[in-house]
Length: 422
Image (tube, rainbow, N blue to C red; front, side):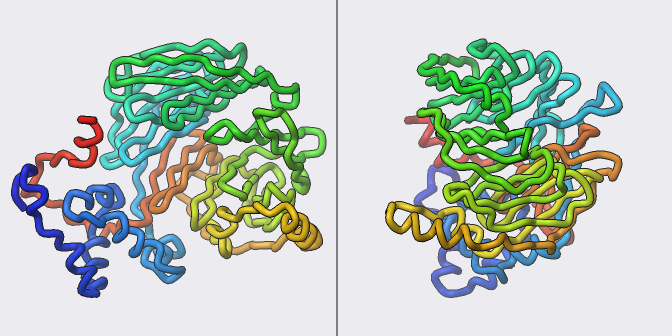
């Protein structure tokens, strides 16, 4: 294909196959790749993203949908260091290349290579628990029981900064561009502007919002810092709060026991708890759309992707749920106030749909609970109470694994090089 300098002269074979309608050949090529290889397709094709989208999201009969339904995923196991008999993975950060795990008992952070499943870094994170982790391009941000927000170098694991703008446990950190949003059980949400590189980090506290006492029972912080979801321990309802104006937007009633996990994506909120159920809500309308039943024990973790929902619970259970028109419900908008009222009235009169069919995955020991869960287009990443992390790759077929031995020198990604030069 020639050296990197001859990038523009390369023949885009994948694009040529697509333009001639030879999608069966494209599928044969793509299905021999691991999910970690898909992003590297940009090195050989100018329309790599569109090709991936066509092949993995072409209706319910697509290759990837079939793999999620009944295919055998490639399983990668990562065993974090246990300092006690029960050592729970209390937080996860996942991106294309790495998995970071925060441990509740030791306060340590471990970073693993998502391709080889080798441990990259072991960091002395926080005193006692690590409750939240977030990857940036150069940094890893953590929050923990010591009430601190700590910023680490992804390349070296060095501590770059310690932020002490909270007075109690930090339970959520969110990175969005040059903004860092943090939330604590001291009922405050803080907004910081940040700048950083591999070896340096600077931040400025821009805003600190002191919320009411109810915020001490919060379970979810939205990425931009717009929304907070709070659990009412007296009646097990959920309240969605607007952070800026400190007002309740909606109230979700239906769980019959304590709620442990909440995830929000677009107009959907998904929750799970001790009543062994997962509930799917339109939080803007305060309406429960679906009740997902089938967990044998308490539900401890939730994840939403555009095509499906993942949940983890007691007895090592991981479940994958296919919900009709999930992506459309996530993207649903109510911009016309008059139509809002009509839609709301119609939905209130409807009872939630009961779904009992799911796919159950059992690789975690039955003696533990699945405490954290991440879901994306290709993979599930789950962590349990015995400090084990599992990466479930639904794209890759193990029988098709044939690593190329001829080229063993990584080729720089030209798009990342251009961005770095800017």
